[in-house]
Amino acid sequence: MGFCLSLSEQTLPAPSDYPEEEREFNRYTLLGEYDIFFVALLKERYREHKGKEALEDLFRAHVNRGILLLQLRLRSLDQLGDLIYRLQAKGCAFLNSELRD
Image (cartoon, rainbow, N blue to C red; front, top):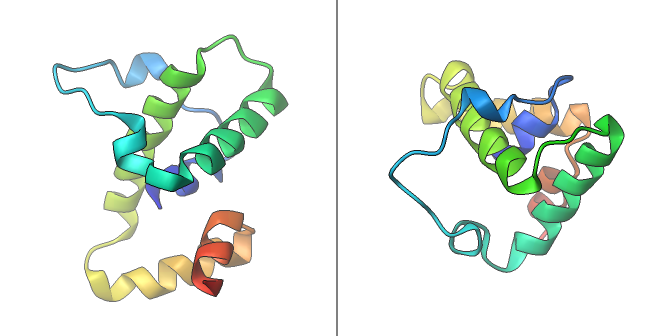
């Protein structure tokens, strides 16, 4: 959800703001069978901005920024439904398709 929230922002996150840390995670472990879908979303966003950042760096930056955005927008789990509703209204396709299944 944080990744999608970050993608919906007007600006791209700067990968240099989210440096690699000692902790490493496997993208497929995080995304599972939806890995291809998330990569496609990232490539579309990347294509629009024609930046030179590597996709892996942008993915890491979006995940990190998305976590920070969630932290700012959610004070309790009770607010999660409202956040999902607002994201759907903004046109976040991932949340729309997930909620239909």
